[in-house]
Length: 481
Image (cartoon, rainbow, N blue to C red; front, side, top):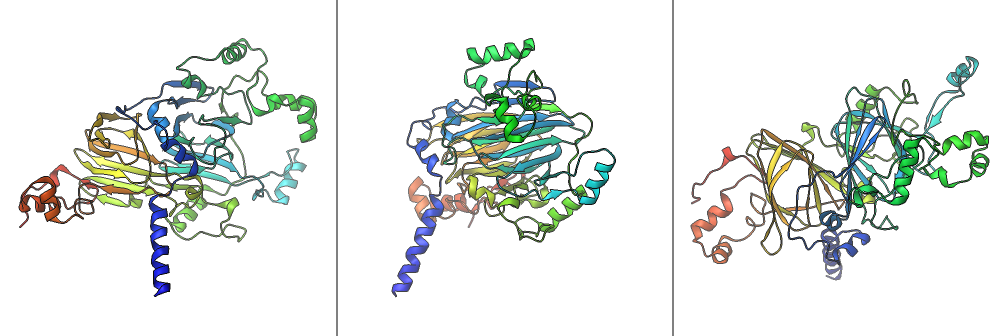
């Protein structure tokens, strides 16, 4: 009997922990007034930074709805053969690849360089006058529909090896407990002379005096520097790397006006398996399957953890209605690294006039990015007030605070979106449909709650048989006996 009571208590505590699961840093946001929103808007980026081989667009992180969610958002467009310079951030990041393909390197501290040329090939290069053999950490491929997780403080770079621009939307979790600086997103670049893409946006399009002077110096061709090596004495750099001081000064990016996305001269070369082999390995692993052993025979570890999952592939949909659309989710169950960074995502597609049935997010804020098409969206707060009732179009962002009710209806041939959620296992409760809160309530309770007849209460419960997505063609208003 005691063992049974203990088990029941343990189960109750586990359920409570699941429902209330949130990072320590996010709790302090909920104590303030950031989420006292009377009006929410669908927002387009308000700052654009041009680089040699691409553009960076940001949404002002000081906007009230982003302060509520504790996030900052950036969209990068990398032209073919463009290289996003190595950098790291004070926040965890979740990246969705809207378009394109390429390679990314994510450098975990203390991990071995498991991609290496053989000694034989290195000796051949050396004899032919080339450099000695190279070795580096794993380089990962990415493609349209991929979600990529980047932990806080972990450096990464990205290269577009395709024939079309890579478009990537990134959410920075500024309120994460992993960020112990402040609520401002910060990018720390290891190379180049990049502009701060968030700073100008935060100041309403105006640069500070110091930034303005740095920009003028760049435009005038005078020496300026904006990466981490700038603040170090060149003699210290030379000693640390055991190089001459002239090379050390080059690391400081003197007179480099290319920005944070640069064009690769020729072809970018690094050690990598053929793409076909990588794709076959991913297919064998499957969605949420067991970890596949690496080439060296070791099971997946910290250094080789999976950091991406494709949620754009229709065959991987978690919810599918032929007449209405599909929804695919990624969370800490099918991508365990998300448990570390406390984020997850949902990828959705709605067909013409189809509806994502009314629902609310139990334990997360949701940041919706419209990929294609347009939809009418309504959001309602705890007082029953409409805080948003309008169109959400391609390229816009809309924030849905935790527990606010939301409904989407496609207003074009096709509406596609990705929702970034501020919990590694975000949960949804529907208001209408077969698995909804209304369906779970006894009909007599419904009849008394709304002062309707028992027949009307049954229609309210049972007329909608779909769970999450519904097409206008599937509507039926017949009474349920």
